[in-house]
Length: 317
Ligand SMILES: Nc1ncnc2c1ncn2[C@@H]1O[C@H](COP(=O)(O)OP(=O)(O)OP(=O)(O)O)[C@@H](O)[C@H]1O
Ligand SMILES: [Mg+2]
Image (tube, rainbow, N blue to C red):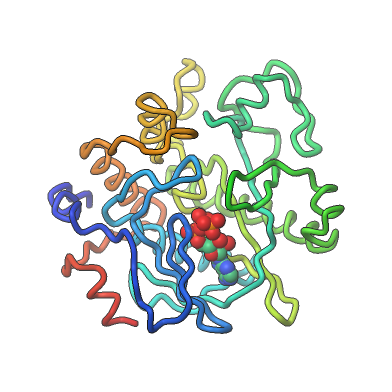
């Protein structure tokens, strides 16, 4: 249930960062605080909202939604590939097996879509036809599905992720050919599973990103997050065909509207300081994250009774 009052109450208590020094060495990513416990990691998903490779705002309950959506998908894909998840001791916390993560993001796309400079639609419009070995024909329309999903890998970097061809991944020794082929095949299977389950819940999984890592014994695991609203885009299946026929954008439950707001009000790729996101948009985004959690999992979102997330995590760790 979407409880806008409860979301409002949480605005001043978003989880923007943590400082659990006793847990081990801390690594601060754009969204997660990760503590190194040797062969395990404690991954705390905060409420930080990132886009354009930077933090834009804090969104109530986003960390909980991301953790619990990932948990759902790890459970529903573990027959395809083993994953890093060991336990979820708190709604914002995952204990995982520490891996050496391949420096490659496995981006899988089911539809010719997107608005950012790295999106498939932007590239297609600019005349690009070869998408990582899949050659697209002329005359495709925006938001139509590909004949089959395509993989367009990028390098994982601190700055800006860059497109990279599979041959280049192997030449630059980012992955062995065997590991690349295995992960690419698994990524497509995961995407197919994601699309099937999403469809059963009235959603279209449009595109997503996977990360894989290796344990010391050589086992490859699915790591990071899976089919979350941060790593993926979802459209509503019910109105998709009608919107496509009318030349309208599909209905979505994602952060695109916040990205659009920033694109209209500043230059999020270059400005040093960004304007604060309007409160209505922050509440709206929170409600969308919660709606997505409930639609995907079929479970009611459990609003925490304790407003102070740090205290609660402390008691669980
Ligand atoms: N099992 C794992 N073992 C090691 N690293 C992992 C594992 N799962 C996820 N990671 C890494 O932890 C980090 C998660 O942090 P977060 O999502 O906040 O970072 P990011 O913004 O995606 O990227 P960056 O780390 O460049 O800031 C990612 O770099 C991810 O690759
Ligand atoms: Mg990440």
